[in-house]
Every structure is written in structure tokens, then in C-alpha cells.
Image 1 (cartoon, rainbow, N blue to C red):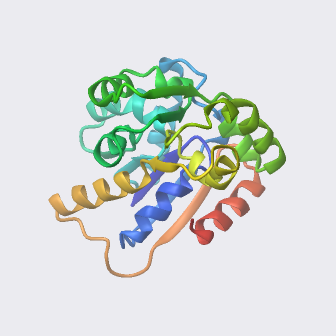
Image 2 (cartoon, rainbow, N blue to C red; image 1 turned 135 degrees about the horizontal axis):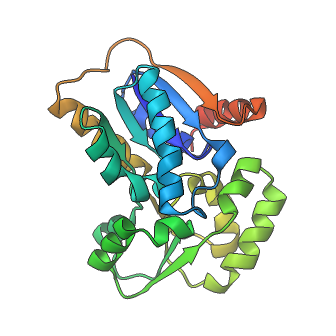
Length: 246
């Protein structure tokens, strides 16, 4: 069984890509909206929260856990792999390397939580592939607005925070929530190139399953959705987003 952990419903963007890979597993999706956002919390606080969710997923029978939250991945995966050596952890990464691979020279804006941008893991990635033409933008409260699903508030936030970057060519979406608002971002920045980590993490899951000879290609997938705040509306919106695709 595969557990998917996110600070809210944004990880649906990761699950959509996993399903495109033909992984027909039993999934438990854990939306931790009770503690959203992770990005404004200390590393120790995030680790304590994430460890609690991991223990819950393991007790429910998960032996593979996908960290669909960039902040959780950046702050926690190294310690989790050390503490749970028998569990396969697949961690999403901000897609900054994709800029280096596909469009390295153009001006780039990295949108992410403050926790992700300040993490050791992201900074190592950034310094390794820095194109010397990149702006790092901490997007405080944006994931919360996306959780809420109010386009008026989202558009206002983006206009206030992105309007000075209209010369941007590449946008790295460093939070799994952000791909859900690509069209909103385009209203402000125009026809930019988007990069996010959802495809990469889905392909890494496939690689790890193949290397361990674990097969989830037959039968049908199933999804159990759990939200830590017990908000029924979260499940309804999650299922709508899951079926809507891009």
C-alpha cells in the first residue's frame, strides 16, 4: 500500500502523475490541513508533525510513503530514511534542476514556501544549478489560499506579489499546491514556462518499484482520502481535482 503525505490537497498534482504512470496500487492520501502550512514552521516542528503522520500511515499498512510536500521533503526525508530503514520514502524536489536541463539561460522565478527556500536540501540544489538569473520568492499564505479555493483572493495575492516580475521566462512551482493555479499565474506573468516536481517524483517511484521488483500494474487503483481537520469539503474538492487533470 502506498501512502501519500501532503500538508493539504495540493499533493493531488502528484497523485495524478503517479496514476498516469500506471501504478494501480491501493493509496492512502493524507491531507494534513490541520497543520497547514508547513512552510512557516521550524524544522523540528515539521519533523514532529510529519513523523506522526508517517507512523499513522505505517499502522494503516503502508510500506511505501510519498512525501508530496516540498517542505516536508526538504526538511524531513533524510531523518525519516534513517529512522525507518525498512520503509521506502519517495520525496518530491523543487524542479530547479529542470530549468538547468531545459531552459537554463532565461530569467527564472522560484515560487515556494519560506521553509523550502531556506532548507539545506533546496539550497544545495540551487547553488549547484544556479543560472545567475534567478529570483527566489517565498510565497507566504499562498498554499492556504489555494486550499480555500477562492479565486478572487488568489488573483489579488498574485497581482500584489508577482506584478513586478513580468519579465520572467521560467516559473518553478516549488509547492505541490501551486500547479493548481497555473492559469491564475499566467494572468499576471503571461505565457511563462512552468516547472514542477510532480512528474519527477512519479517517475522516481516507478524506478524504485522496478528496482525492487514490486508490481502495481494489474487490477484497479483505490484511494482512501483522510483529512486531519475532518473537513468534508476537502475530500470533495480533492476528488474533483483528481478527476479534472490539468
